[in-house]
Image (cartoon, rainbow, N blue to C red):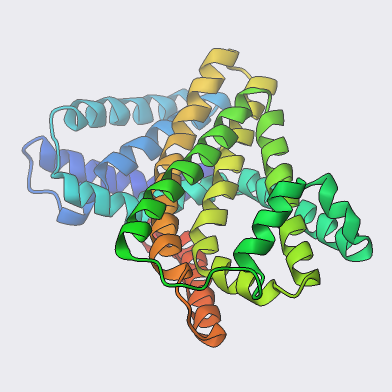
Length: 322
């Protein structure tokens, strides 16, 4: 990207930050929206300053951005906006913008999951016995007991069971996400293998259950909470790949500095991942297990997927460049 294109793209953010800083420095009152996005703007400015240095843009531009960053740093650690507006600003703009800034890594993570799931699905449809190469015999029996109409327990769970399962799902899902993210430290291989394994397991389970006549109970159960859960796991995989790449190809930075920068870029995404997993656990515990008409389950599931995708692709775009 040429310097002129870089300035044209990011100047609205710098100007908004300048207005905010003037207000915080006693030269007026900054707009409430600017205050809510102050921390996210500061983080974006630090990223842009690093890019300007890495790409060798003019010293004038680098000095201007550095001065703006220092002023923002002083105000950020002097001024603390209330927690609720900062959280609202993060989830309204900061999180989806952070996801989109790393879209290439999330795309690789998603492709690893989806393609492995489709490959294993096709292989098991061709040879059903191959399911045992991915899923152990005990797990196959558990899946059939959970989802097969003739084997599963359709009795209603009470509230205590729902709460207990809610806690279990949070523990299990966050553990998977953290291991996937941390696996990126193994040069990205750990994160990639985690996505391939999770995709293969999902494809094997879905293929086997479809062959034994349990596809509808399975898909009506997973479709709603699968939106935040699978999306969060794919985002965690993308962050893990980003960490691994920073070690493999640090560029002009030392590997420690490159890893630190990558971790700073990934942390906002991982904060959102944990929240998505809590939402997924809530849906799985209190909605997915309910016995309702398949049309209702599929409609709610489609709404969950559609709303989440719209949020990640569109939220925060009207508030300036990313």
